[in-house]
Amino acid sequence: MKFKLHYAWIIVAVTFLVLFFSSGVRTIPSVILKPLEAEFGWDKTSISFAVAISLFAFGLGGPIAGTLVDRFGPRRVMLAGLGFTALGLLPLTQLTELWQLHLLWGIIVGVGTGAIANVLGATIANRWFNQHRGVVLGILGASGAVGQFVILPGLIQLSSGSGWRAVITTMAAAVALTLIPVFLLMRNRPEDVQLEAVGGKSAAAAAGIAERGTPLREAIRTRDFWLLAFSFFICGYTTNGLIGTHLLPHTVEHGFVEVETAAALGLMGLMNVFGTLASGWLSDRYDNRKLLMMYYGLRGLSLAALPFVIEMRGLFIFAIIYGLDWIATVPPTVNLTAQRFGRATLGTIYGWIWCSHMIGAGIAAQAGGFFRDQLGDYHLIFISAAVMGLVAAGLSTRMSIDGRKSVVPASTPAGD
Image 1 (cartoon, helix red, strand yellow):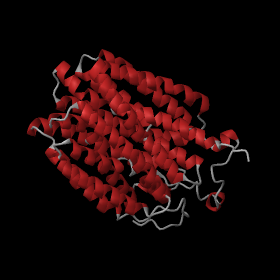
Image 2 (cartoon, helix red, strand yellow):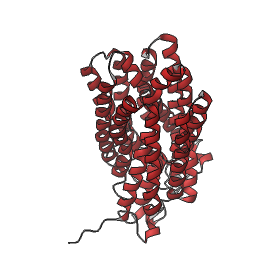
Image 3 (tube, helix red, strand yellow):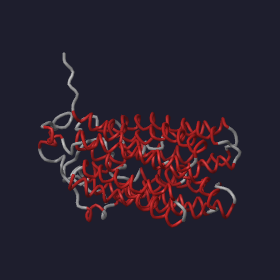
Image 4 (cartoon, one colour):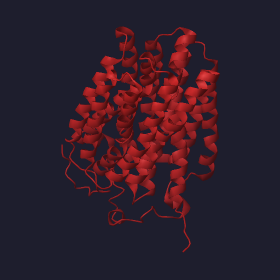
């Protein structure tokens, strides 16, 4: 029998590539923070402020991208986001003033990468798949983990050998080259290539239920929206903002050498791949609220132990446990959002939920640098993240829908 590949999987491959390099760009601050401090004499609070601005802009790119994707489709948004990111990266090699870092990395790269981040993958999965949607969300979520696993150790080595400017130049070139497959292969909907979504039209989709949506002004009046938003705020606080920005400086200050930390980060990225793929598979089969409770609880416990890690064995154990649920929260959060508010407005509503994620990340990035400068270590901020992880575990149990179904009738109770 002749095997015929559905074009949706080409779309997944292109999107994976875009998200892979976008996540690689987002790892840059952890690599260049100490070199910038050494070369320009800027303290961690000042540099962390630029990272915080970028994370806020990254988050704002989510609802902007979500609205634009709902209106113009993923292809144009991908091209614009990649172009904006490259435009912000290239001048960074000539950086001389702190305000330039705030503008170029903080705003331009922040918005550019935000436009081609998590919201895009959620939209692709929900437009092109009526089956295996959780698995696809896991694959696209894992792109960030693979980016961390492959790109971050390489950037650390590149920075050690050739300096931080080589890191910027390399990532700018990679982003620019990614424009080519997007331009040639990306399509907005299955109908653009005369196909149906993978799995065909479900009974609900045939009845028009799958494409139902909820206006943002109605969504924000529901308890579920705020439970999703605040739990994702905590997700950002405990991942991108804190660990993504400050783990490398923290380990170096605790006596670990950068090559050792790079190995631990690579292991964390590898475990993240397994964890995210498994989460996608599990989110198609089990109560997504219980999955989130488990992920956030495990994350909180691992962060509580981090200040006491003083040897490589402990760092590797942390990398395994923490890595398993770094991005594992994404598939169930997307599923719950689509289930609760409908797929037609998923880009817009999930975009704002994603924005709350990055607001949390921005606060953690800035707070991490501030408390490090004030107290001399990161212990307090890691403990705060551990407590918040446990809070998010509790919030997850309060949501009104389990998220296992693909769609629900418009008459489903609001659960306010």
